[in-house]
Length: 204
Image (tube, rainbow, N blue to C red; front, side, top):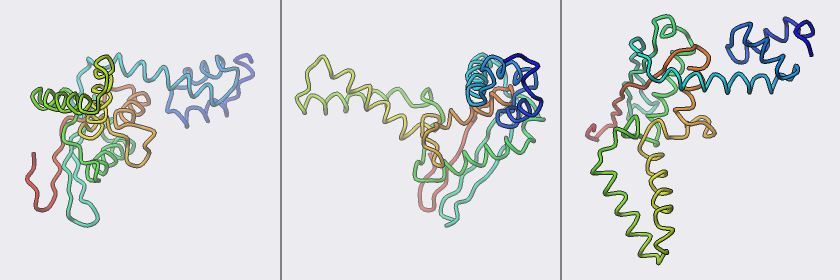
């Protein structure tokens, strides 16, 4: 399919679905031979690759938001950063912040934003426990490291926000949500910090 055979309507549809620029959408449709789903996948792949390149950029704008659960027993205060005030004021970014705050308020109850925030002492303690459990079950020495790594992955999913499956769509992680919008807006997006309050509990 040539560029002339790709209609403006198709380009608009792909832009609406992905948030990509006009020329990027047209090129993706060309590359995909007019296949809308394939073109969307091409743009997504390129967008996520671009997100990785943005990792070193500064995210100095953003929003602080609050969420209180319907039962008034759990509340969340969260800061999510982006690169520009323009993006911070878009409805998509505002919704992303609210969605992540809601996720934190659910029983998923993360304690850290990233893996790097987990104290080394806590991580080593968990590693020792997982290794001891594997030995008690009589697992061979050569498979114990793999078992421990698998259990550490589950530990991160339980405690680290970015590793957790999103409560509204468990096919995505919270990091995946950030990457999706980052690909659309072309900016670095970062969950800077959060505090989760529950009636009767001490905050971390």
